[in-house]
Amino acid sequence: MKSFSLLALAISAGVAFAAPRPIPFAQDLADTVELVETQPGSTGPTGPPVGIDAPPPLAPSESEIIADANDNFVTNADSDVKVKKRALPPAGYYTVFEGLSGATQHPSYITFKSFPTYDPVACTNFCNSIAGCVFANLYIEHVDAQAPQPSSASAATNEVFITDSNGYSKKINPEIAGWNEEELNAAINGKRANPTDPDPYMGMTTIEAVSKPSLCKDLCEQKTAYNSRHPTDGKYRACNFFNFYLLFKNGEGYKTVCSFYIIPFNSSYATNTGYTSSGNVYTVHDSWSFTREQLLGEGGIVTI
Image (tube, rainbow, N blue to C red; front, side, top):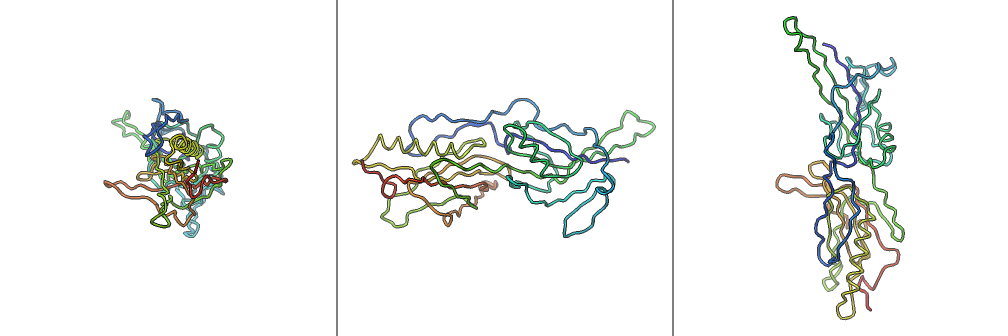
C-alpha cells in the first residue's frame, strides 16, 4: 500500500457561523437598526475537495523522524511529513481547536491551498491575503492508494483520512475612535455597587455572524439617542460602556454578542466564561470591553 500526506488549508469567511440574521434587541432600543452584515453563505462548495494530487517530496532535512517528546514533533514515516502538533497560534490569531481528525465544512468556505510543510504562519498569511477571510483550518490529508486485486481492477480506491486539524480564528481589530478598549479573558458580568444604585445593565443583542466591535458601538450610541428622546422626569440613561465577544457552541463559532451598560467595569468583572445548556457547551472568545472616553451623565444618568 502506498500513501502520501497532503498539508492542506481550508479558508473560511467565518468560524462556522451561519449566514447573518439579527436577533431582536433587548429592552429600550426601539428604533429600527440597519445592520452591516457579512456576505451570506453561498450554495457553492462548503469545503476543499478530498484526495487531490500529492505535493512534491520534502527535502531530506524535513523528512527525518524526530522523537523528541518535549518538542511534540510527529513524523509519518510513509509520507515524510513532519508536524509540530502544538505550535503557538500565529500572530493576530487564536486557536479555536487543535489535533482533530476532521476538516471544517461550512457555507462560509472560500478556498483552499496545499503546503509542503505544516506551517500555521504560512497558513494564516494566506488567509490575510484574501479579503473577508477570518478563519483558517490547517490539517494533514492522508491518501492511501490501495493496489487493486487481479480479479477486480475497477475496485481500486483512494482512502482519505485527516489528522492534526487545527483551526485558527483572526483576532478582532478593537480600535474605535472615542473609546478605550481592554482585552478580557471572559465576558463582563456587571452589577450594582450598592443596592440603591441604578441598574447598570442596558440589555444585549446577538448577531448570527462574525461582526466587529464598531457595530456594538453603533448600537450603544443608538440606545443613548433613543433614551435622550424619551426622558423620564428630565433624565435618561446613557450607554457609556459595552462588551463585545464571540460566543462558541461546542467549539464552533455561534454568535457575536454585544452587552451594554451605563457605567464602565474593569476586568475584575469579566467572570462569564460560558455555560452548558441542553447538552451543548457555550464558551466565550475574543472578549473586549469599550469605555467611552468622555462619559455621559452622572453615573450614566444624564439630566436634561
